[in-house]
Length: 250
Picture 1 (tube, helix red, strand yellow):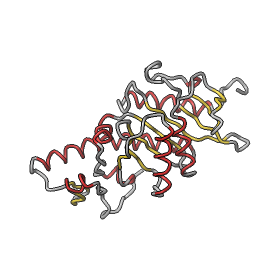
Picture 2 (cartoon, one colour):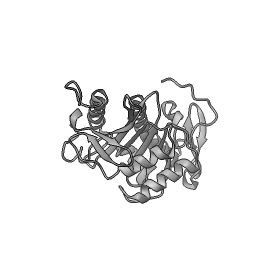
Picture 3 (tube, one colour):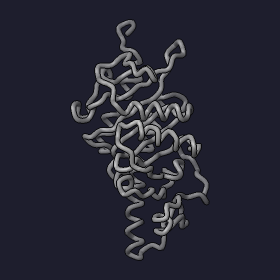
Picture 4 (cartoon, one colour):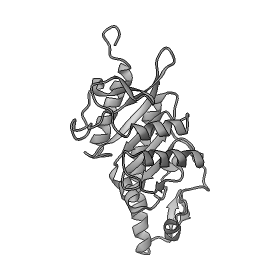
């Protein structure tokens, strides 16, 4: 603390607002999730702004800026913040280490996306707003908070050279969105927008799947063209619009 203000006050205020917004939008549940983004102090030293554990069950999604944590990477030392560090810090560190471009990590239990994650099926990516995240795939199951899950995600990002931003489905566990930007705050706002728009896409993909079973559609459609089929879904082939260019729109 200096001159009466808490360390990284603006960034922690922003995180507190994001926590409440995600809960208000029902994009996570009482089992939680965890969010973080990178910051740098005046000396150039890097820290992670991170949600405290039990933010859902104990705090009901209402967290003050002073409860938001400032964490030293790898030592996992809490430099500031009243809360305790989540065990899922290992997943966040693994993601940041996998690609230095990533400046924000958002893990949530968004219900429509959780449907696809729990089914073990990749999510067809059909809407214009979500085209930028391309292939929305589900990873094999590993237990939450485990080193095995952190290693699985890290290796997947590195081996597939995933573009940023991207979203991964964690089997039976939720969604993981990794984003970049001018700074960590800009990146977490990008991740938040992806969380919201992919939730809409998840429901639309579900309904297009039902329409195919009802013989009302002959495949998955995006931007006026057919981009996949039920056979592609069952065979694990990526379903997203690779023919019509993404027009941006941010």
